[in-house]
Image 1 (tube, helix red, strand yellow):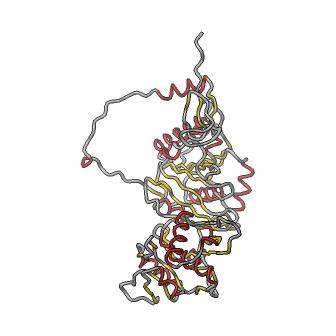
Image 2 (cartoon, helix red, strand yellow):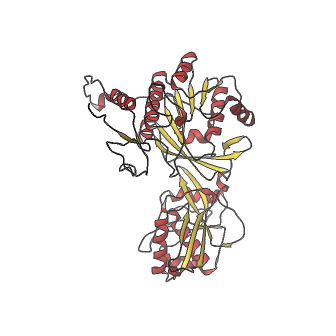
Length: 448
């Protein structure tokens, strides 16, 4: 009798192997391999069989441009990050840590769209209808066109979609849904992969906009195979501490718009709402302080004034600590080495901690000058004025270089009534803001 073939599959990325391995060579996950049953192997073989059809390549000049029809979510922040609204037939994946507000946001969005006359189906595989009703009462999200379904079986969800002419579908969450055609548990690689494919097919066939909520791993990525992110049209991630009132929804993939925009929400008694007066959420005005400096970063087309905080203390260990929250640690180490070289600061004997207030993460280099200012201020116990902004990229040679869209950033500073700004290059036009040019890091100390 022939020996049955054994096949193992990684539950993190879907990588398959003929033998069990402790660490996945594809995604690096430990102890993620599970043996596939005979039924699962037969199912994978059946789904891998494809029929080829004749096709002919055509010139790109003969292809007509496709126009995507959008409709508003009635939420300015979500429309911004989606590129102007929800595209009909699009498949949108939203991920985030537990308690950050994914279900709360989509329930409110579903209610907003239902109030505009469109039928919305909210499918929950984690909560009962009674639990969702309690949240809807708190959010004031009750609407006759908002239909709730507590179901985890894909085939029954599809049957419900055939009964009414829905225009928006919300799945909460993709890891709880299963198909009875697949012999594996909900949340497995096979289930998530096949269910997402079916939802994508339904969304395109019915012009049904679909939101999918996805759980994330401890590393911060969407749980399940990476193909999940490749199949959907848009991928959005929630950022921010669940203990703070501000939440940032950032786009990491968008086939219908830019990924540079970010939506900012505020957690209130009525759930997540578009943050008002965003400009003052990430910094505080007041008396001059030690170890604090202000800068302007761009989140998409939106300038934000943020506060950079630094703490420098003498280390009691041979290897001093370097810690950074909201700023890249490798770049911080580079700036510290530059300060030791150019300003002769003995930072190799001090612990350095850097924090970006408000829970925001800075990925651009325009904050380099503010980071250095805050570190020097803490090291020398020298106060920095809260009416001064520091803007500039610092190179390895100690040169302070101009950042892109400097004029847009300075206009935001004027709107917030700041007095002066330290920049690499003076603006061409005269402004109400007093600007001082600093070309070298060594000259920065004169302006503190």
